[in-house]
Image (cartoon, rainbow, N blue to C red; front, top):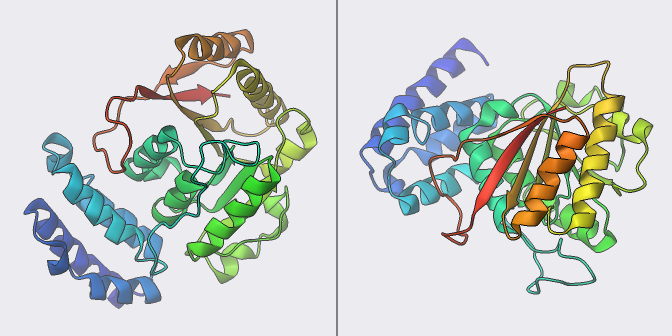
Length: 306
């Protein structure tokens, strides 16, 4: 960013900070100036700085604004990079075409909220999402957290088709379906302001170690995939394979979000992690509820050390 552009962008920050801390009406924010800066400067970095001056401001962390106000502000901010809000095509049925992956589940919303509050966990990194479903979590991360590459993955044909539609619906460019992000090093050369986005067919039970190694992830995430013992065992096996095939590079971080519907299933997951030699720790609850989901849902995020 040129010095004069940097100075102009920096002048936006106090304006957003003052208005947000005073809970001013959203139409009073300098959205037009922001859109102009996003077109001719380092957009993702500017958005991260605005998040730090608003929802991540120490005063807001200690004394959060209303959920409705924060949600409306973030919805407006998220849609600025492409001119669109995060828009999803979903099934109206919980189970459709033999899969549950055509709807957004609560833990996906919960993980997206955590990511928005913790963008540094994903900034400039390769992110692999296991079981992406409708794509809400990944779209939120792509629009607010500046990953260098984001790999959506799932195994069901209908889910993959809907996922591709949702990515394009949100103004993101979709790279050819490949398991090797490193094959396209020219991506950052021509468009460093947006992540390289791919969709991969990934069946946890049949994917090979070389196929997993080709993704070269820095961060692995999954949301609401612990819904039965069979998927728990499959997930742990694929995490084991990832750990083994990436042992010669810096160990990736993994964040698994889930709703505790059946305590025995969650206990099975942590027991299998222990049996596989994968240490884990619970991630503290984040501060703000930005998306609509069941108020009393018991949701957790585990950070795994692969």
